[in-house]
Amino acid sequence: MKRVTQFIGLITLVFSAFFAGQLAAQPQFVEGRDYVRVAGIPESVKPVVREFFSYNCPHCYRQDGLFKASMAKLGDDIDFERTPVGAGRLSWQLSQEAYYLAQKFKVTDQVHGNLFKRIHEGPGAFTRQEELSQFFVEQGIAKGDIDAALASADNKLTLSNYV
Picture 1 (tube, helix red, strand yellow):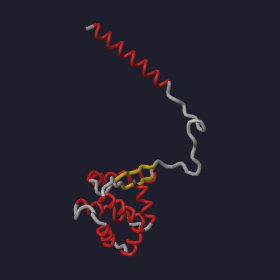
Picture 2 (cartoon, rainbow, N blue to C red):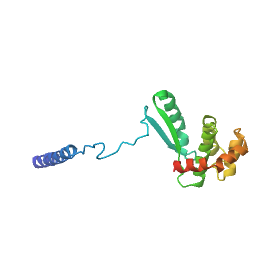
Picture 3 (cartoon, rainbow, N blue to C red):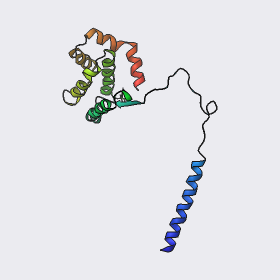
Picture 4 (cartoon, one colour):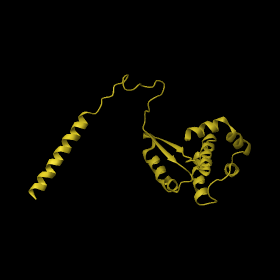
């Protein structure tokens, strides 16, 4: 038993010495040599919490209340941002467009919960752009404005940034 204890102690000592050497060998990064500070991009004054989500994701649906409560609790101390993900699925990509439309028409607060409810408690996920357009018409947005926004270069650029 004494030999086992000594062996374990020796192994612990060897690993401790190895990891201590690794920690001491951590590189020190130097601006201009190891990295370049990018000019023109302002540093964030406040921390940013970014939620990657999909209206189609059942986990996101269940956690939305927690996210809202966190936003309310932390308030002005943190900037909250959402990024919808498409995961290469048509219905999820249509949900990305739904988020784009909500942002474009400044109705995100109004429709955010309604989108989750429509998908998880109602008819289900959007399968065609016409369904998406109809949803926003029901939220009070003019069909012509929706169609123009969906056909815009801004929509395509925004969706490409979500990927």
